[in-house]
Image 1 (spheres, helix red, strand yellow):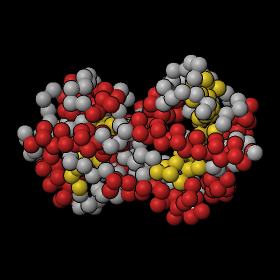
Image 2: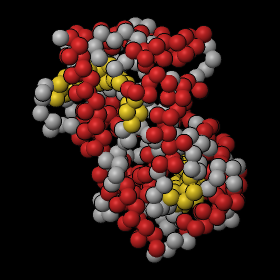
Image 3: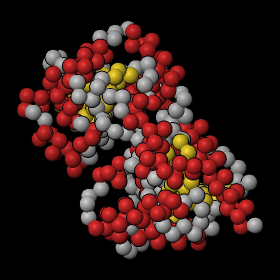
Image 4: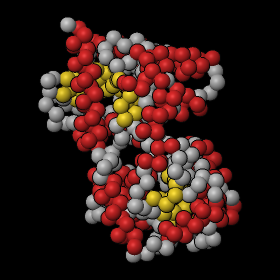
Length: 375
C-alpha cells in the first residue's frame, strides 16, 4: 500500500541536531526500505540546513509563515501545506499540533512538562490550555514514548486514553557493540588519565546540575573530575559562575559533541550522574549503560522503566546514598566488563527498527480509517 506521510521536521532544520531531531532522523533511516512509503519533511527556516537526505522518497518543504509569535506557521501554514502536498497522514513530532486538521493528524507528545512549565501569559494560557488540548482531542492518534508519559497524558486528558500508543525510542547501533570505534573529543583527550564523572542534562532546573556539583564535593574523591554536557554556548557562562570556587578546576564543560564523541566520553567515565527529577524517556540512562558505564539516577517518572544492569539507584534527596553509589561505581573494577556485556544485551530492547515499525503501523491504521470513512 502506498503511503505519503508529512512530518514536522523543524528539529532537523537547524545547525545542530539534538534529541528530538535524532528521533526524526532515526524514523526516516529505519523506514528507508519500506516499499510505497514517501515522506514530505516540513521545516520553517530556509536560512538553515535540513539535516536529512532527500530524494525520490523524501522531499523537503521548508517555508516561512508570518506570525510566528502566534504559532501561525504551525496553526495555519503547516496544515495548508500538508493539504496542498496531498499527504495521507501528517505527523507532528514535536508535541504541538494545529487545531485545523484538513488531513489526518498524528502527534507525538513526549511528556506533559510544557504545560507545567509554560510562562503564565494570556497567549500561553490560550495556546497551551485551550488550543492545544482541543487539537489533541481532534487528532487521529497520539504517540508517546513511555508508560510514564502515557499515565501523565491520560491523567490530564482522560479522553485521549483510547487513541494513545506507547512507542519507546531506540538507541543508536553504535552503542550496541563493544568494538564500535569512537573518537575522543579534545576535552576528553585533555583530561588524560584523570578519573572523571559525566553529568548529562544541561542547565534546566529539573535536571539538577547543582546536585551533581554537590555530589562531586561530598563524595570525598578529590581526584575525580566532572564533565558537564548539554550546555549550549549561551548557557555555559552562567553555569561556570554557578560552580563553587573550590570546584572550578575540576569541572569541565563539553562543547557540542558528535554521537561518536559522546560514546567515547561515556566509555572513559567512571560513572554518569543523571540527577533529573522528571523525564518523558531518558536517553542517557540507556546510552550510558549500553556504553558500559554505571549511571546513577533516581527512580522517578519514566526512569523506573530504564533500570538495567549498570543502573545504580539513589533517592532524589539523599546525598549520602548518591555518594555511596559513586564509590560503588568507581570500585567496580573488572566486574564492570561483565556488567557492560549484560547491559548491552539489555539495551537491545530499545530498538529504532522496532520503533519505526510501530510508527508505520499507526500511520497505516490512521490512513485506512480515513479511507474507510471517505467511502
